[in-house]
Image (tube, rainbow, N blue to C red):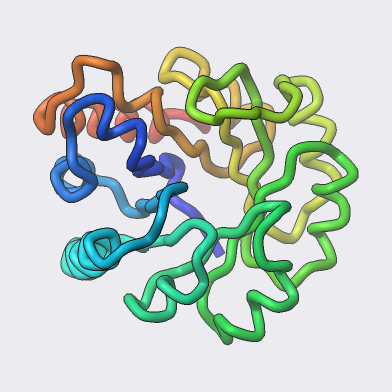
Length: 213
């Protein structure tokens, strides 16, 4: 499979701190050309979050984009989304039983985890944080570009998504170090973000990374 080079993550907490809803942010990013969006909500999944997820799933389908739900296989199945799980979530083998042929992504944070992921029934693997990040409360140790380059050789049959502290300034270097896609949260959403700046930012990210060989 081939992933878009820019993989925006809609982190509900980060968006709320900027006065943005996940729906308005998603619409702006889709208008800017996003072809994949992940919803990351670490709080309680109440009915309002479920309704938001349904809206995002519909909007992504209409835009021809892939919608991914973080952590929650039940909600991913209900809204017809792909699923992304982490090291402390539902194990990938069990997640695959639920998801069937639906797309499944998996987070790793070091070479040992990445190497183990090579034999798991997942469609892509994420590695990070590549750089220091402020959008995770207890981040794992920074990987860095040199380690990313080395880790790329450990999993060759799945797309590798780099995540963690990536900005437009260093995104090209991350791709050149071996990542197939870069997942971004704060790098697309400065504190003064509006729907308009998100759309413009998404356009700039796509144009910049499309030029990377």
